[in-house]
Length: 141
Image: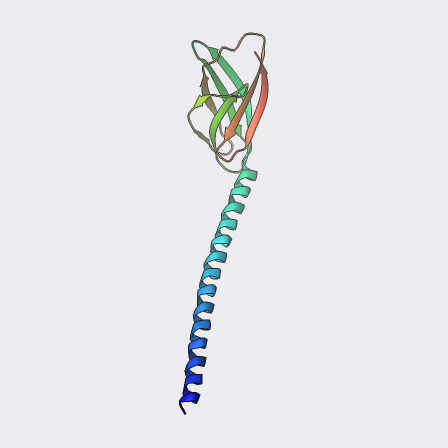
């Protein structure tokens, strides 16, 4: 009689262990796939906003003093507002402030750089948004 009861107890203990492991795996997998799903959703939103973001530099003014100040008139012709983050002049990063531009609007985006730009040269100007989109143009000074 003891032999039959011990087999039943062993089977119940095995079922309990296997069920516990199954619940742990199910809980982990559910959390993992939920996290992956939300990450993919956020990434696709970012990609959509990157595609909607479109801007162009329509005018540039260069003010030479101790530091060179470059003012770029940027027009947002996209479907979402953009945040301009940085400006590069001939590959050198300029000191700028962030500037938000709404769809259909244009603003001046100013940058200052400690670099002398000689006359009668070409300048490579690159304006970069917070999402990584950029507009690059060449200016003859």
